[in-house]
Length: 323
Image 1 (spheres, rainbow, N blue to C red):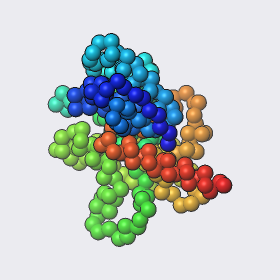
Image 2: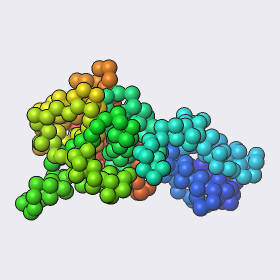
Image 3: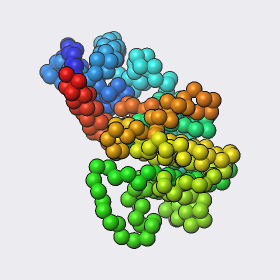
Protein backbone atom coordinates (compact mmCIF):
# COMPACT_ATOMS: atom_id res chain seq x y z
CA UNK A 1 0.00 0.00 0.00
CA UNK A 2 1.46 3.36 -1.06
CA UNK A 3 0.51 6.92 -0.21
CA UNK A 4 0.98 10.47 -1.51
CA UNK A 5 0.08 13.96 -0.31
CA UNK A 6 -1.43 16.96 -2.11
CA UNK A 7 -1.52 20.41 -0.44
CA UNK A 8 -4.28 23.00 -0.91
CA UNK A 9 -4.37 26.71 -0.12
CA UNK A 10 -7.03 26.27 2.59
CA UNK A 11 -9.14 23.56 4.16
CA UNK A 12 -12.22 25.24 2.64
CA UNK A 13 -10.80 24.59 -0.82
CA UNK A 14 -10.73 20.87 -0.03
CA UNK A 15 -14.35 21.00 1.11
CA UNK A 16 -15.35 22.76 -2.11
CA UNK A 17 -13.51 20.14 -4.17
CA UNK A 18 -15.19 17.28 -2.29
CA UNK A 19 -18.61 18.75 -3.07
CA UNK A 20 -21.88 18.75 -1.16
CA UNK A 21 -22.02 15.76 1.19
CA UNK A 22 -18.72 14.56 -0.37
CA UNK A 23 -20.48 13.74 -3.64
CA UNK A 24 -17.42 14.57 -5.79
CA UNK A 25 -15.13 12.59 -3.49
CA UNK A 26 -17.36 9.51 -3.71
CA UNK A 27 -17.42 9.81 -7.49
CA UNK A 28 -13.60 9.87 -7.63
CA UNK A 29 -13.20 7.10 -5.06
CA UNK A 30 -15.68 4.83 -6.84
CA UNK A 31 -14.02 5.37 -10.21
CA UNK A 32 -10.39 4.99 -9.10
CA UNK A 33 -10.55 2.86 -5.94
CA UNK A 34 -8.23 5.28 -4.13
CA UNK A 35 -8.66 6.13 -0.42
CA UNK A 36 -8.54 9.81 0.61
CA UNK A 37 -7.80 11.14 4.11
CA UNK A 38 -7.90 14.85 5.03
CA UNK A 39 -5.15 16.30 7.25
CA UNK A 40 -5.73 20.06 7.70
CA UNK A 41 -5.06 21.69 4.32
CA UNK A 42 -3.68 18.46 2.84
CA UNK A 43 -5.21 15.31 1.45
CA UNK A 44 -3.44 11.96 1.65
CA UNK A 45 -4.08 9.38 -1.04
CA UNK A 46 -3.74 5.70 -0.12
CA UNK A 47 -3.83 2.77 -2.52
CA UNK A 48 -1.86 0.93 -5.14
CA UNK A 49 0.74 2.90 -7.12
CA UNK A 50 -1.49 3.13 -10.20
CA UNK A 51 -4.51 4.23 -8.14
CA UNK A 52 -2.49 7.00 -6.50
CA UNK A 53 -1.03 8.14 -9.83
CA UNK A 54 -4.48 8.43 -11.38
CA UNK A 55 -5.91 10.00 -8.22
CA UNK A 56 -3.25 12.70 -8.15
CA UNK A 57 -3.88 13.56 -11.80
CA UNK A 58 -7.61 13.94 -11.17
CA UNK A 59 -7.19 16.02 -8.00
CA UNK A 60 -4.56 18.29 -9.58
CA UNK A 61 -6.85 18.89 -12.57
CA UNK A 62 -9.83 19.66 -10.31
CA UNK A 63 -7.71 21.86 -8.04
CA UNK A 64 -6.74 23.98 -11.07
CA UNK A 65 -10.37 24.20 -12.20
CA UNK A 66 -11.46 25.23 -8.73
CA UNK A 67 -8.84 27.97 -8.56
CA UNK A 68 -9.85 29.30 -11.97
CA UNK A 69 -13.65 28.99 -11.67
CA UNK A 70 -14.22 29.18 -7.92
CA UNK A 71 -16.54 26.15 -7.99
CA UNK A 72 -16.89 22.66 -9.42
CA UNK A 73 -19.84 20.97 -11.11
CA UNK A 74 -20.56 17.26 -11.36
CA UNK A 75 -19.70 17.41 -15.07
CA UNK A 76 -16.27 18.84 -14.25
CA UNK A 77 -15.50 15.85 -12.02
CA UNK A 78 -16.82 13.32 -14.55
CA UNK A 79 -14.82 14.95 -17.33
CA UNK A 80 -11.59 14.93 -15.28
CA UNK A 81 -12.03 11.24 -14.48
CA UNK A 82 -12.72 10.41 -18.13
CA UNK A 83 -9.64 12.26 -19.29
CA UNK A 84 -7.40 10.42 -16.84
CA UNK A 85 -8.91 6.93 -16.82
CA UNK A 86 -10.58 6.76 -20.23
CA UNK A 87 -14.11 6.07 -18.95
CA UNK A 88 -17.08 6.39 -21.35
CA UNK A 89 -17.97 9.95 -22.32
CA UNK A 90 -21.00 9.99 -20.02
CA UNK A 91 -23.50 7.82 -18.24
CA UNK A 92 -25.32 7.83 -21.55
CA UNK A 93 -22.59 5.56 -22.88
CA UNK A 94 -23.32 3.04 -20.13
CA UNK A 95 -27.06 3.31 -20.73
CA UNK A 96 -26.51 2.18 -24.31
CA UNK A 97 -25.93 -1.27 -22.80
CA UNK A 98 -29.11 -1.20 -20.68
CA UNK A 99 -30.89 -4.57 -20.44
CA UNK A 100 -34.65 -4.45 -20.97
CA UNK A 101 -36.24 -7.24 -18.90
CA UNK A 102 -39.80 -6.10 -19.78
CA UNK A 103 -40.85 -6.05 -16.13
CA UNK A 104 -43.00 -3.00 -15.38
CA UNK A 105 -40.75 -0.86 -17.57
CA UNK A 106 -37.75 -1.89 -15.47
CA UNK A 107 -34.33 -1.76 -17.12
CA UNK A 108 -31.06 -3.06 -15.71
CA UNK A 109 -28.13 -0.71 -16.31
CA UNK A 110 -24.42 -1.57 -16.16
CA UNK A 111 -22.86 0.79 -13.64
CA UNK A 112 -19.21 0.60 -14.68
CA UNK A 113 -17.29 0.32 -17.97
CA UNK A 114 -16.31 -3.23 -17.01
CA UNK A 115 -19.93 -4.22 -16.56
CA UNK A 116 -20.81 -2.62 -19.90
CA UNK A 117 -18.06 -4.69 -21.54
CA UNK A 118 -19.47 -7.80 -19.85
CA UNK A 119 -22.97 -7.18 -21.23
CA UNK A 120 -21.59 -6.49 -24.70
CA UNK A 121 -19.49 -9.68 -24.60
CA UNK A 122 -22.58 -11.75 -23.75
CA UNK A 123 -24.43 -10.14 -26.65
CA UNK A 124 -21.64 -10.97 -29.10
CA UNK A 125 -20.69 -14.51 -28.01
CA UNK A 126 -22.42 -17.83 -27.34
CA UNK A 127 -20.00 -18.87 -24.58
CA UNK A 128 -18.72 -16.32 -22.06
CA UNK A 129 -16.46 -16.72 -19.03
CA UNK A 130 -16.52 -13.91 -16.47
CA UNK A 131 -14.05 -13.66 -13.59
CA UNK A 132 -14.48 -11.08 -10.86
CA UNK A 133 -14.58 -10.39 -7.12
CA UNK A 134 -17.69 -10.48 -4.95
CA UNK A 135 -20.21 -7.73 -5.67
CA UNK A 136 -19.20 -6.83 -9.23
CA UNK A 137 -22.49 -7.97 -10.79
CA UNK A 138 -21.35 -11.19 -12.49
CA UNK A 139 -24.45 -13.20 -11.59
CA UNK A 140 -26.98 -10.36 -11.56
CA UNK A 141 -26.17 -9.09 -15.05
CA UNK A 142 -26.06 -12.58 -16.55
CA UNK A 143 -29.50 -13.35 -15.07
CA UNK A 144 -30.82 -10.06 -16.48
CA UNK A 145 -29.43 -10.96 -19.91
CA UNK A 146 -31.06 -14.40 -19.66
CA UNK A 147 -34.46 -12.85 -18.86
CA UNK A 148 -34.08 -10.44 -21.78
CA UNK A 149 -33.27 -13.34 -24.12
CA UNK A 150 -36.29 -15.27 -22.86
CA UNK A 151 -38.74 -12.39 -23.22
CA UNK A 152 -37.49 -11.48 -26.69
CA UNK A 153 -37.90 -15.14 -27.72
CA UNK A 154 -34.21 -15.68 -28.42
CA UNK A 155 -34.44 -18.73 -26.13
CA UNK A 156 -37.27 -20.88 -24.81
CA UNK A 157 -35.81 -21.62 -21.40
CA UNK A 158 -33.37 -20.46 -18.73
CA UNK A 159 -31.30 -22.97 -16.75
CA UNK A 160 -29.35 -21.70 -13.74
CA UNK A 161 -26.67 -24.05 -12.43
CA UNK A 162 -24.39 -24.07 -9.41
CA UNK A 163 -21.95 -26.65 -8.02
CA UNK A 164 -23.01 -27.91 -4.58
CA UNK A 165 -19.71 -27.04 -2.90
CA UNK A 166 -19.67 -25.82 0.70
CA UNK A 167 -17.63 -22.69 1.45
CA UNK A 168 -15.23 -23.94 4.10
CA UNK A 169 -17.72 -25.64 6.40
CA UNK A 170 -19.77 -28.83 6.39
CA UNK A 171 -23.52 -28.36 6.57
CA UNK A 172 -24.17 -32.03 7.27
CA UNK A 173 -27.62 -33.57 6.79
CA UNK A 174 -30.24 -31.20 5.43
CA UNK A 175 -33.96 -32.01 5.92
CA UNK A 176 -36.68 -31.91 3.30
CA UNK A 177 -37.09 -33.02 -0.31
CA UNK A 178 -34.41 -32.67 -2.98
CA UNK A 179 -35.27 -29.02 -3.72
CA UNK A 180 -35.05 -28.14 -0.03
CA UNK A 181 -31.68 -29.88 0.28
CA UNK A 182 -30.07 -27.99 -2.60
CA UNK A 183 -31.79 -24.66 -1.87
CA UNK A 184 -28.90 -23.25 0.25
CA UNK A 185 -26.51 -23.75 -2.67
CA UNK A 186 -28.84 -22.23 -5.26
CA UNK A 187 -30.13 -19.34 -3.14
CA UNK A 188 -27.92 -16.65 -4.76
CA UNK A 189 -29.44 -17.41 -8.17
CA UNK A 190 -32.96 -17.21 -6.74
CA UNK A 191 -32.10 -13.89 -5.09
CA UNK A 192 -31.03 -12.45 -8.46
CA UNK A 193 -34.23 -13.67 -10.11
CA UNK A 194 -36.49 -12.25 -7.41
CA UNK A 195 -34.68 -8.92 -7.52
CA UNK A 196 -35.46 -8.55 -11.24
CA UNK A 197 -38.85 -10.27 -11.62
CA UNK A 198 -42.05 -10.28 -9.60
CA UNK A 199 -42.26 -13.19 -7.14
CA UNK A 200 -45.38 -14.65 -8.75
CA UNK A 201 -43.81 -14.44 -12.21
CA UNK A 202 -40.75 -16.37 -11.02
CA UNK A 203 -43.04 -18.95 -9.43
CA UNK A 204 -45.00 -19.40 -12.67
CA UNK A 205 -41.85 -19.71 -14.74
CA UNK A 206 -40.47 -22.37 -12.40
CA UNK A 207 -43.74 -24.30 -12.20
CA UNK A 208 -43.91 -24.36 -16.02
CA UNK A 209 -40.24 -25.39 -16.30
CA UNK A 210 -39.40 -22.20 -18.19
CA UNK A 211 -36.82 -21.37 -15.53
CA UNK A 212 -34.95 -24.27 -13.98
CA UNK A 213 -32.44 -24.04 -11.13
CA UNK A 214 -30.37 -27.18 -10.69
CA UNK A 215 -27.16 -28.41 -9.05
CA UNK A 216 -24.33 -29.07 -11.48
CA UNK A 217 -24.43 -32.83 -10.83
CA UNK A 218 -27.95 -32.99 -12.31
CA UNK A 219 -26.75 -31.76 -15.72
CA UNK A 220 -25.14 -35.02 -16.83
CA UNK A 221 -26.75 -36.62 -19.90
CA UNK A 222 -28.80 -33.58 -20.90
CA UNK A 223 -28.83 -31.60 -24.15
CA UNK A 224 -30.25 -28.10 -23.88
CA UNK A 225 -31.47 -26.47 -27.08
CA UNK A 226 -32.64 -22.83 -27.29
CA UNK A 227 -31.62 -22.32 -23.67
CA UNK A 228 -29.75 -19.59 -21.81
CA UNK A 229 -27.56 -21.47 -19.34
CA UNK A 230 -25.69 -19.79 -16.47
CA UNK A 231 -23.12 -21.61 -14.34
CA UNK A 232 -22.48 -19.64 -11.16
CA UNK A 233 -19.41 -20.21 -8.95
CA UNK A 234 -17.68 -21.86 -11.92
CA UNK A 235 -14.32 -21.71 -10.15
CA UNK A 236 -15.54 -24.57 -7.94
CA UNK A 237 -15.88 -27.06 -10.78
CA UNK A 238 -13.33 -29.74 -11.57
CA UNK A 239 -11.96 -30.30 -15.07
CA UNK A 240 -14.35 -33.24 -15.58
CA UNK A 241 -17.36 -31.29 -14.35
CA UNK A 242 -16.62 -28.31 -16.57
CA UNK A 243 -16.23 -30.49 -19.66
CA UNK A 244 -19.51 -32.24 -18.82
CA UNK A 245 -21.28 -28.92 -18.33
CA UNK A 246 -20.04 -27.19 -21.48
CA UNK A 247 -20.97 -30.16 -23.66
CA UNK A 248 -24.64 -29.84 -22.59
CA UNK A 249 -24.88 -26.89 -24.99
CA UNK A 250 -27.42 -27.50 -27.76
CA UNK A 251 -28.43 -25.54 -30.85
CA UNK A 252 -29.37 -21.85 -30.46
CA UNK A 253 -28.17 -21.88 -26.85
CA UNK A 254 -25.93 -19.53 -24.91
CA UNK A 255 -23.74 -20.26 -21.87
CA UNK A 256 -22.33 -17.81 -19.31
CA UNK A 257 -19.89 -19.10 -16.67
CA UNK A 258 -19.15 -16.80 -13.73
CA UNK A 259 -16.65 -17.21 -10.93
CA UNK A 260 -14.24 -15.67 -8.46
CA UNK A 261 -10.92 -17.50 -8.47
CA UNK A 262 -10.03 -15.97 -5.08
CA UNK A 263 -12.93 -17.90 -3.48
CA UNK A 264 -11.86 -21.42 -4.40
CA UNK A 265 -13.49 -24.15 -2.29
CA UNK A 266 -12.08 -27.18 -4.10
CA UNK A 267 -9.78 -29.66 -2.31
CA UNK A 268 -6.08 -28.70 -2.24
CA UNK A 269 -4.11 -29.43 -5.41
CA UNK A 270 -7.33 -29.61 -7.47
CA UNK A 271 -7.27 -27.55 -10.68
CA UNK A 272 -10.29 -25.31 -11.26
CA UNK A 273 -12.28 -26.38 -14.30
CA UNK A 274 -13.05 -22.73 -15.07
CA UNK A 275 -9.44 -21.55 -15.36
CA UNK A 276 -8.57 -24.68 -17.31
CA UNK A 277 -11.46 -24.11 -19.75
CA UNK A 278 -10.46 -20.49 -20.35
CA UNK A 279 -6.89 -21.60 -21.11
CA UNK A 280 -8.12 -24.24 -23.56
CA UNK A 281 -10.89 -22.27 -25.26
CA UNK A 282 -9.74 -18.65 -25.29
CA UNK A 283 -9.23 -17.50 -28.86
CA UNK A 284 -11.94 -19.72 -30.32
CA UNK A 285 -14.52 -17.72 -32.28
CA UNK A 286 -17.72 -17.33 -30.27
CA UNK A 287 -15.96 -17.62 -26.89
CA UNK A 288 -15.58 -14.44 -24.83
CA UNK A 289 -13.65 -13.85 -21.61
CA UNK A 290 -14.22 -10.87 -19.30
CA UNK A 291 -12.36 -10.04 -16.10
CA UNK A 292 -14.07 -7.61 -13.74
CA UNK A 293 -12.09 -5.90 -10.98
CA UNK A 294 -12.57 -4.05 -7.72
CA UNK A 295 -13.60 -0.98 -9.72
CA UNK A 296 -16.71 -2.89 -10.82
CA UNK A 297 -17.94 -3.68 -7.29
CA UNK A 298 -21.38 -2.13 -6.84
CA UNK A 299 -22.47 -3.45 -3.45
CA UNK A 300 -21.96 -1.50 -0.23
CA UNK A 301 -18.82 0.65 -0.52
CA UNK A 302 -17.14 -1.42 2.23
CA UNK A 303 -17.23 -4.54 0.03
CA UNK A 304 -14.58 -2.99 -2.23
CA UNK A 305 -12.39 -2.28 0.79
CA UNK A 306 -12.93 -5.78 2.19
CA UNK A 307 -11.96 -7.41 -1.12
CA UNK A 308 -8.88 -5.19 -1.39
CA UNK A 309 -7.80 -5.96 2.17
CA UNK A 310 -8.06 -9.72 1.66
CA UNK A 311 -6.26 -9.51 -1.69
CA UNK A 312 -3.37 -7.62 -0.07
CA UNK A 313 -3.15 -10.19 2.73
CA UNK A 314 -3.06 -13.01 0.18
CA UNK A 315 -0.29 -11.33 -1.80
CA UNK A 316 1.82 -10.71 1.32
CA UNK A 317 1.28 -14.28 2.47
CA UNK A 318 2.36 -15.74 -0.87
CA UNK A 319 5.48 -13.57 -0.89
CA UNK A 320 6.46 -14.65 2.62
CA UNK A 321 5.97 -18.30 1.72
CA UNK A 322 8.25 -17.89 -1.30
CA UNK A 323 10.95 -16.46 0.98
